[in-house]
Amino acid sequence: MATGQGGQVIIDGLNMFDIINLISRKNRRYMANALDELEEILGKDSEQFVRARKIVLDTMNDYTRSVFVTLFGNIEGIF
Image (cartoon, rainbow, N blue to C red; front, side, top):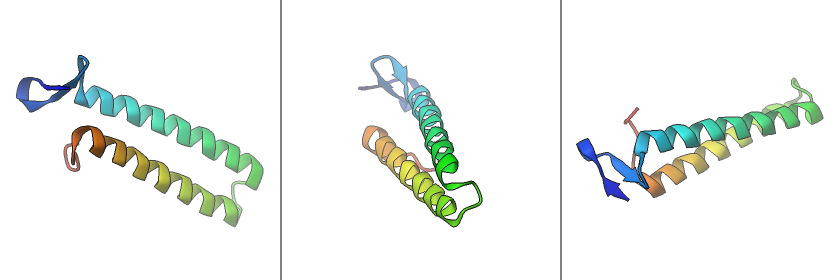
């Protein structure tokens, strides 16, 4: 890991913003797949699906944020 132009973090030739975008895209895809599966099993309008959806979204977002903080430190407010 090195610091590139303008203080941007470079990991193996990748820009910090490229890494964040890649992880975010993959995160959204995994969440969408998990929610699709849950919706099929529980039904879109069921109370269980609404609760499970919130748990999945909150947990994945917290995990993704922790990955970013581990890699880059606090990035809140950059975007």
